[in-house]
Length: 553
Image (cartoon, rainbow, N blue to C red; front, side, top):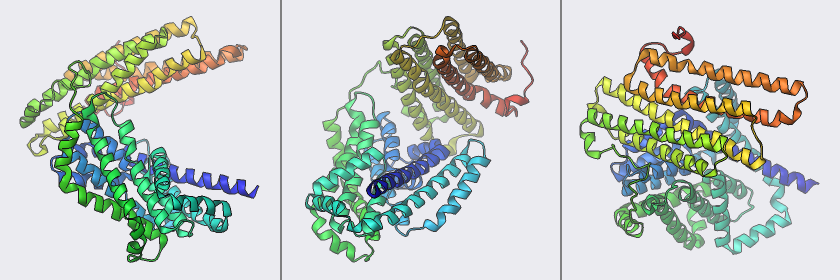
């Protein structure tokens, strides 16, 4: 029983550690995600600046995986050259070591205050930057508490015979230890959490220095795998140059680091006697040396990757930008016009995606669902292309009107992309669940859902027209479409409750499921309103829909 409690406690605190790291990462990304992406795209002109930018962004969000995915997406759209992209990845690898250095000093006493302030900010503020920063502080506090509890838990394990045997076996086979740590870092999407765990083991003498350093090498290798598997979804080999190139630098670095492991304990001993600090220092030293070695070699390395992974262009690829001409950036007004035309392409693609989603939901058409997902992915890539293109404009040459128009384009593009993502994850997910569970909507639900999807399609057309015209009255009408969807959901909820009250329990599951579909449909519609109606109303001083008079019928 005691062993079971220890195992459950260990697993629980590791899960809390991972969740704390996740909250820190997602909190910063939600608060500054678009701004970070724009900043990253602007800094991709020269390798040294790209290196420092990758370092700074990763130090902020504490995830080299997230930075890697951002850079990979920019590179896959052709908006980031390979050499600066590889430099940014080297910087990201160094940036992720900074919080490990801070945590090696065990600032656990800050945890209660961080959680208190974070919860207050999270509950006090509406969804927005302050709300997300509160989430970040809560995550940092949970991370510190989990680390402290793990340190406490490991004390009685120092004399556990089974753990000693397992660690001794890993000590004899450092390659297996490296692979195990790499798998853990890949699964958790966080080298930070894995290195912190290794620091806890080292603090109590449960791992020898050489084994601890081998595990650190594995953690660094594991996070390079995620962008390879998740960063690119097309079949163009050129899109994989950056993630595979980053994985190559990590792999070579780990091989050289593994060869130097016999001398590493003595070298790290010169920097201090504390085992946990030694792990953190090795983590920093490895990434700094890897960056120093590879930065001068990036250009020939990029040529090798270009030769091994040639460009394969598909003129019919919907994700390929049509109007984002590099030469047009010399004249900001022309570049903004080209970006606006590209943003309108998003609505054309989303129109087609909505039609396929409609067929997937109402006709159980599997091929239509696959086509909708393909188009939604293209919309996401095209949105990233537009963001990167606009980020490279010289801000000093933009007039105040140009800056406002740039903001309008970004807002429109981002919200159409969010609407497509929700349609894919929500509505298409519901279509798959209907098929999997063999559920059938009743005729009234099918008719209502068909009309709802048709209304979304019309609102999408209206949002596109409003993006061009900026008409105030049209914006008011589109904003009040939220009321229709609120009423629709309320009426469906009431009908669902009445069915349950009269004993029609067999329809309860399908009824609740249908409400989920309507909520996601309302969410898609809300993004369409955010895309063009609210920006127009904001420019006219009407920031909230409830401050508007009802539009004329």
